[in-house]
Length: 210
Picture 1 (spheres, helix red, strand yellow):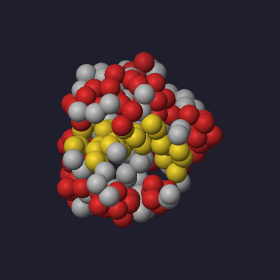
Picture 2 (picture 1 turned 45 degrees about the vertical axis):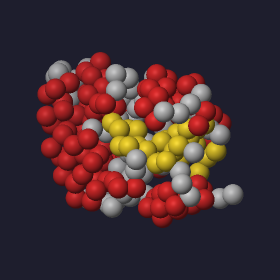
Picture 3 (picture 1 turned 135 degrees about the vertical axis):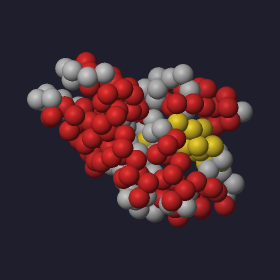
Picture 4 (picture 1 turned 120 degrees about the vertical axis):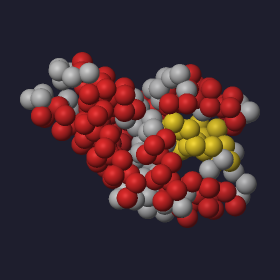
């Protein structure tokens, strides 16, 4: 089987730090953060999130917003952000069973790769992809179709894992099997995520259950 993992909130416990950078931009501009802000921005990536902030009234360009957020985020990813519980053990077990392990994330390579290497996870994956490697975001079904094509398999031979409802819904629409992954930042949407998922796990031990 071909496993395709999201990164932020799925493999690593980064969502509070990542999302807070953009929430701070809104607060500094006197803009109330929408209740569903994290749900909306998770599949958008950094540039898409910065653009979304401009639509909420931030009087800066997306590039100016990213200048503020990028430096702080790099330090956190390069040195501090941990893997979520049981991730490494589960990945090793899946790889030993002959499964293909891959990453598909909105996180840019400059933070993605350095974090996976620091945590000793990078070499476990056959492919590490950012949305920057595609013409679509994770909220669009086409990115999952293209991912399967790059793997040389059908979408029916892929399992996509994510903590975000919008990404899981798009992957499901493409024809992939989807596993929802619990994260504190998406806890309010747990029931919605579980409802569209073929399987819902609270941590990576759930991948090893028969």
